[in-house]
Length: 111
Image 1 (cartoon, one colour):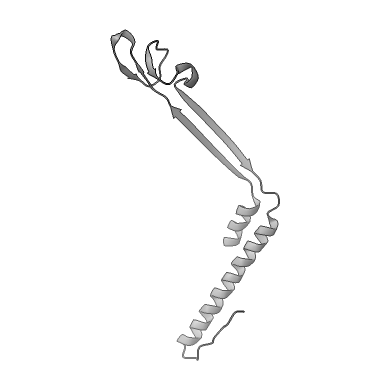
Image 2 (cartoon, rainbow, N blue to C red; image 1 turned 90 degrees about the vertical axis):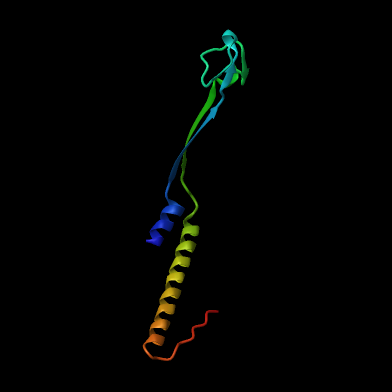
């Protein structure tokens, strides 16, 4: 299971979608009345961002596709690390099983 996850992480394509919205309301002073306008159709006397520059907000979206080209060596290294970790866990479990069954403990040293 872990090896499959690593293979997908290091060798498969990845697609991401991001978006952003910048909100730029104004305070309209038209008709001798001040009010907050979230999306102005065209106020003439107002305070805030320039309607022509901000268009009441900025909308942005991006679709990104990434394909790793040279990650096979990294994948193989990571897969070997997972395999070694699994072997160490198996050795530790076997050593505990022997101790619990009344046998003398086995000391394992890694160099």
